[in-house]
Amino acid sequence: MKKNPFRKRTFFRKETSLRKKPDWKLWLKDKKECKVWLDIYIKKRILEKKKDESRLYFNKAEHNLNLANWLDAKHENEIPEMFGEETFYDWVLSMYYYAVYHAGLALVSKLLFRSKSHTATLCFLIYYYYHKEEIIDEEDVELIAISLEKEDIETITSVKSLRERASYDVHALFEKEIAEDARDKAVAFLEKVREVIQE
Image (cartoon, rainbow, N blue to C red; front, side, top):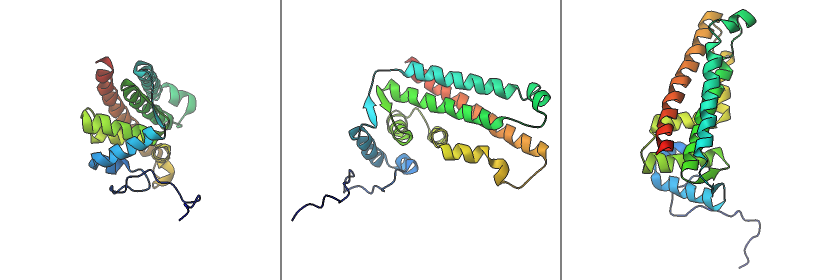
């Protein structure tokens, strides 16, 4: 019997219960499935061996964190003086997430890899730093996942249009609280990463 050239090739092991689409929440529960996906990413060269540039990635993470903190602080006086009721918490939030993203890349680089995909990055971090080393926890993984998924950032930063209209003061307070929560989580995550990078 001839092989059908149009048949889709599969890289998945038949004995696993892999889904066709990567699922980081499933990877948290199932180390073996996470490893299968990790092997796929390595085989496809989406994750590649590379020299340790973790310090450079971490410096970028700190850079993003510093800019986010600076812009956040400007909301106290300068932004209201210049722009009235307009706020820029959406940009503050995005910068906090970029700080987390670059810190995650620092962890990947620390183990001498480079990632070409957000999903592969998350798979790598879950396998090595959640399952094997137990350096990050489920909350960290969720924070990293949010920072890697552009759609989630856009959802969070466009809450104004999705939620019921409220007065400006309530809305500004709501945005500020989201940004403060993101800051606290980003700072805590960067501290964990700093310890790993300095080892």
